[in-house]
Image 1 (cartoon, rainbow, N blue to C red):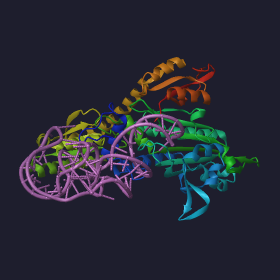
Image 2 (spheres, helix red, strand yellow; image 1 turned 60 degrees about the vertical axis):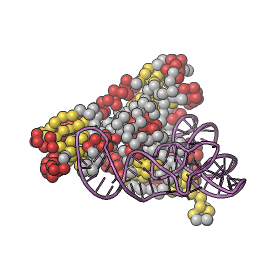
Image 3 (tube, rainbow, N blue to C red; image 1 turned 90 degrees about the horizontal axis):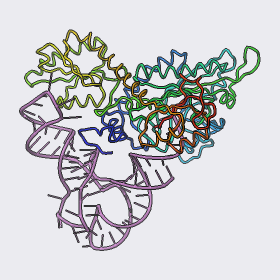
Length: 480
RNA sequence: CGGGGUGUAGUUCAGUUGGCUUAGAACGCUCGCUUUGGGAGCGAGAGGUCGUGAGUUCGAGUCUCGCCACCCCGACCA
């Protein structure tokens, strides 16, 4: 990574340099002394805290309660569900020793908590009256990935995982859908992230799930990012952990379970979906700081400008706008650039000229459009501006995604399209039978994987573009 | 785990065929003065086990071998 002190590497020159520079220079995160693990700095963590606060409300609105389960899980638990252990065993961290003493039973550092949660559910669920049982936990997860990138894939990451048990498959299906809908709505309304909800193919589903739903997002480099998932686990885990309840009918039944998670990866999605050559672009709803006040003054009228700024501050406070004033010794130009790097939606320049005219100069991060606003008009202007920016960011993401979805009908067409460049071409849509081996072949030959079968067109059937068998409209993309 | 690359100041880097005795620059940092409408100027200053271990040599940042770490590209994945 090259790092010029002044200008950011343009996205078009090197996406990965741009990405890491934005993260370090906006002070979101830092590389840590531990391979694959990042330090989330206060500014990045403030974003995560806002995500947590908003999502926590939405999770609770689904009737889910927060709880906490241990970070250590007996290794044997993992092995009880065959697909699950196969999926996760290669990437779990094992605790084998305490000091120099070997442990009787190895412990894994949780790569996800299904197993230990169902071990507890087994005791908590006795009767149909105990259902549904819905818990969520905010925690850290460790998966020893071979290759890591800040936020997108780190050895340790933070997330939220919801786990529910239900009496019927229908109820569980509904929960899976409610979880996914909650994620997508949150991403859209709060993070200005446009996503496509869909179901994963057999090859891409969660290890141990009957089916996995996902919301997939297209980044500005046209690559795909799986940003959150919601799984129907069926009765597999319930059987493995003996989660049974006595039904109204007097018989024992296995519970139907679901799990769903959203991680700090979503911060990577915000960066990659909205950022530009000046740095981060944060939607106002998520931005820890929504407005940056930059004082501009000559030495002799610093006090007067400060006095004037306090009036601006009073107005912002009253409106509940999150703001900061940059009184540092740096030049105005420096402060402008810093504000842009950090993705602050609005800049409010307040200088002698503004003071004399009774205005402030307001600049939008998205398009650098400047306008003078009378002090008395701040209350009617700023909330609208923030709302406009939020909408603009979302609309531009939506437009970009839709412009880069290409339909093809044959595999030749598909190959020609995606192999003509090393860059991602976007999402490719076609009918696909969903066969695991066929998908492996596609991946081998094109590096593209199925992202999802969009729920919107889930019932549409057509001839698979490779095998000619009945298929569903499926989106392929180059994944992060 | 394969392929490539890099380790010298907080950061990005320079350091010639091994040699000038005190290892440099820029940016950043500290202090002072002057500045403030798009990354300010001048002056002074702090900051280094040259990744690590061994070897070759009168002499190693520079050569040899081992080790370690990190980055990028693949395979694997939230």
